Amino acid sequence: MGYRVIADRETTDQMRMKYGPRKGLEGPFNFSGRVLYYDPLEGAYYDPTTDFYLSQEEADLVMRYHAVAPV
Image 1 (cartoon, one colour):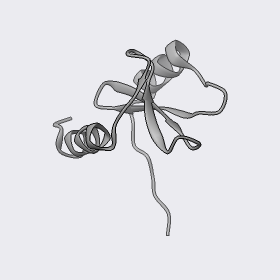
Image 2: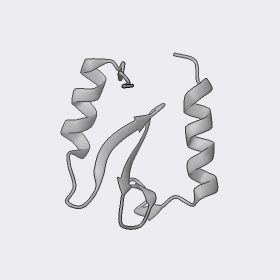
Image 3: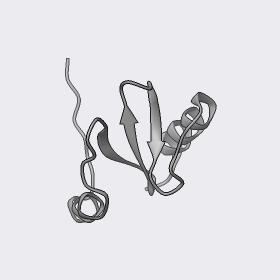
Image 4: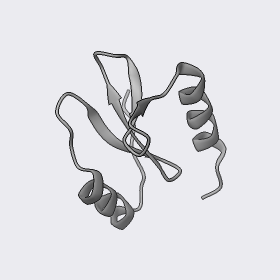
C-alpha cells in the first residue's frame, strides 16, 4: 500500500526555497499554510516561525484543521 501527495507545485517550490532542509529534521511540510518540520529524535513537530516544538495537542489541532480545511 502506498500514498500520493497532491500539492501545488509552485507553492511547494516557494516554501522549500524559503525554508529549505534542516539537518536532523524531516520536511518542510506545509499544513494549510503553516510550515513545520518533524524531529524524529524529539518525536515532535518544530515550527521555524516561532522556534518552538509543538505539543502533541497543538500538532493534533494542526493536523485536524489541515484534514478539513477547504482548498
